[in-house]
Image 1: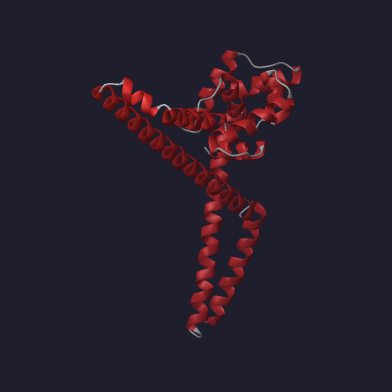
Image 2: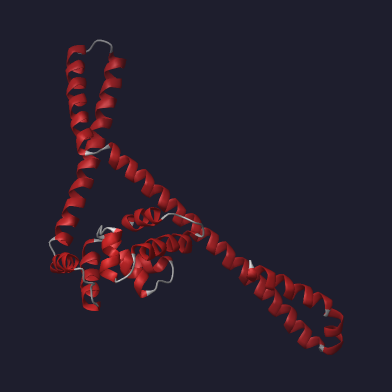
Length: 243
């Protein structure tokens, strides 16, 4: 709001003093001034458009995260078992139909194929998550981190460097993707790193020597910084987990 006010004030000031400027400036100086003004306006418009495009892309990514989480929830281990039971029932019905009522048989085979596909995707996602968690949760730095939490102590610079290396070995270019979103302070990056390895907010506060309220503020502030609108700390966590 303050920036917009300053811009409008400058425009009004410019218009009010235009005649005086015409008298003072030479033709060449006036031409250069006009060209500089036009260039500034064009660059400003391009910057705004690029910013909006970036926000839309990030919002689209966040929407995909929500959709993916809903799909994962729908394809949990319990539902995989339910799908398998339904697949067995469909196979039994299809066998009994034989060549009779071919249209119904095709519809049942289509349902079975969809259930098979949903189960395959769910099992692949579960395996990927389990492998990633095995590497991270079994790493020396993670075990040291749990020990520090038990003692109520915070992590040092070396711990965070090591954790960053482990995370990027599992989630390729995580740090690069994170820094491409916006400029991050050292503290903000460390919070994101701990969110990525699924550390609880109260434990993040301990490991970074900050208050729990401060950690919540940092996460919600990061959401607003990246997406240009207010969001909850949980929404930021979901986004980080998607990277």
